[in-house]
Image 1 (cartoon, chains in turn brown, yellow):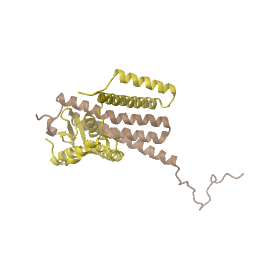
Image 2 (spheres, one colour):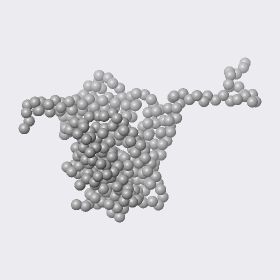
Image 3 (cartoon, chains in turn yellow, cyan):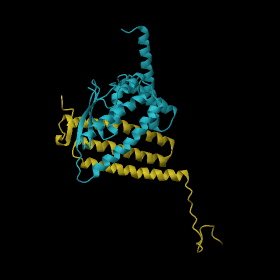
Image 4 (cartoon, rainbow over the protein chains, first blue to last red):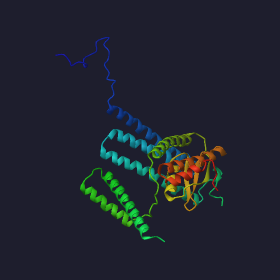
Length: 132
Length: 192
């Protein structure tokens, strides 16, 4: 009994057949994987920024920008891999609420920090909020 | 004094706004449940009615119109700046031994409507190295924290960026009068 074509031992000199044609699903899977890793790395960078920045206001920068983009990339990766309509709706909602609420939260924390005097003035070059 | 015709028009407008709010809330409800059925539609209508009755919000005065070109320009620029700002903050966050200096600047907006103030504040917080610390609603002034200031030129750049951002928002959703107003003033001009 002969094995089916392509599964038997290779004869010397016979080229290895590789399927280079990428299906759209494979492309979506790869792009999804790349987005997931990039999103995770940005979230990590945001966490390191929150730890390392010197004062509350600077930390809120780390907590808004790389973190929001990280979440958006994670959501993009998820939607590229899940590809069902009901999941896409939920993902779109998460993204919209993330974009709408992150600045509000950052502003609330920033204002509270400023008004309670938790601002390191040595790090500020200009402060036009303090001037009358 | 408002005449009867004006009162009617205002009421029609209020009704229209309420129905847009109901539509949006029902849509969110359906997306949350993940499928469209009569039960979910009914549940969404009940939830929307409850939200609008128990948590009434002040009417948003929106008399602009949506412009597709402006919206696309704003969205495209927004994505580019979000990516750039994220990488920038991530980089200075991880750079060893570097302490970023910052500044708090006051930026007066050209169009001090509630809607424009809110949209600009949201976008400024997400975009280029800037964060809202406080808002003067009556004066239409945003107090913005700028991260990573190395030279006085950086502060001027941040001020200009915020004005350009406001322009893009007005070009996307503002009224014709507002658009004329922002176009008549050069970007570099300091407002009193």
